Image 1 (cartoon, rainbow over the protein chains, first blue to last red):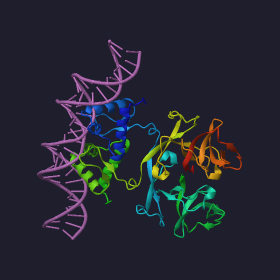
Image 2: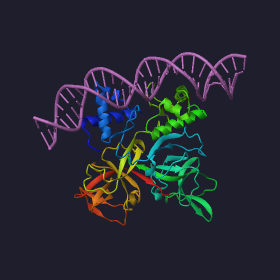
Image 3: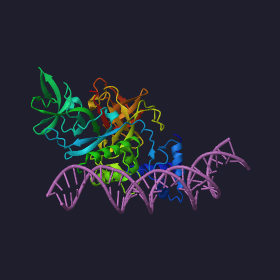
Image 4: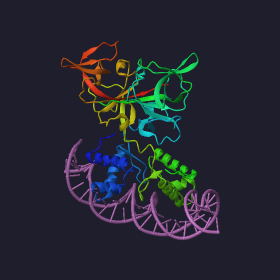
Length: 207
Length: 207
DNA sequence: CATAAGACTAGTCAGATGAATAGTATAAGG
DNA sequence: CCTTATACTATTCATCTGACTAGTCTTATG
């Protein structure tokens, strides 16, 4: 990408801002209006210069079709929105919209999964999984409806609270184990509801 | 959001698909053309019904301004692209485009930071930071140019390789320490280049 | 000095676009 | 039976929009 002039950068920033605020790219007249141009040709010149330099792209003769070419955008894959659930009631009903506490948006390549509608996220409470390097406050991405394999980290409903545990099989029977010596539990997993299998983790430092 | 009819869902899906493929929302005539409507009014009716039911939004009398109202989209914040660098040469030059190995896209709320142009990501190699629950293969988001505080995890350039270490201060002097008993290093941080301070972590399970 | 590129003004034009009116047909619900 | 919602056809209209020609002024650059 060739270097942009000061004015061209301003125009590009205005297009980006309009795109993220209004959701639509501005028309040439709106660009001209924002910068006080008396003629749209000025805006059209800037847009064509930005396209020529590779900073903008979009088809010709199409209204509001400008899309900035971020250098990183070419590398990025599709973005997915994963609901961050507060409390999960038993069974993970289809109508999850009421329990959604937030939203985790990641691109599938960084998280390494292609999420289905059964993918959800939980905020980890407590340090019962510290042995698997999962800390209090981490966000865990899970997938519902998968059958866990031995050693997988799963979310299970215990005492009406969803807890993270390691899924194990001993003597042919499934068990759940906390990964913290202070929680020496070994719970038979037979009657428990496995709500999801862990797929990824996001940790933000509150530094 | 009220329930959508079969046809309305089809129209909504078409709009979403056009939006993600072409980057612009379709015009009423394009919608009519795709479904074989002889009149745009059919498309206009569907669009107004979708807007009335809350599935679509956008200003009136504006070309290609349709934006779907995903229930999760309301919760999601702005998405940022963070370059995933392979090797960092000394000094972290401004022209990072050559070293970009990939791209991590996250929304700022899940990662808890508002990234600057000096934010970058690294893939962790080795388990020298296992004591801080940072594993081999994790992706670490760092910020360049910050002055680290004692206890922060930093990326430093040692032997022409960037390594994660804990930043410590002992007797008034800065030191770097690996968080693994097998790496009992305590390196004076005076002559070292601190490339960035850790802000967040993303772990994907290769399950 | 000549030239090129950038940054504009002024105005025109064809085509794209959203909105509107008028009307038809079908199905569901009271 | 009447009303309402859905799903369309056909057509018109004002306006929006991108592209265009023609020209000015400034600032670099060789």
